[in-house]
Image (cartoon, rainbow, N blue to C red; front, side):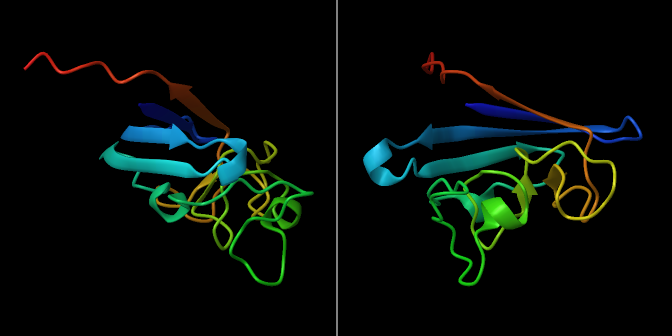
Length: 125
């Protein structure tokens, strides 16, 4: 289970939870599997589902002309390039190079994004 807590610069908060969450091994490119969204932040991870991890020296994103990790200053399971960008630098300025969750505050950098990972508990039924 992945729990994501979002904090804006004006102290508003939202959350997203994904009951299906896993990261593949090195051979798979650390492929992201994420689904089963619930919460009030909007499902910004859906566009990253199935993506390989992109770093400055390993361009696995689907953007043909740029490396998203270089262009947007942060590693992630980038697609073309992002709907969320939690591993970017903390920047108040809205320049596209800060932490983002565009399904909640499109085009606005966030103050904090916290990822919490926990095992899924077995059903009692």
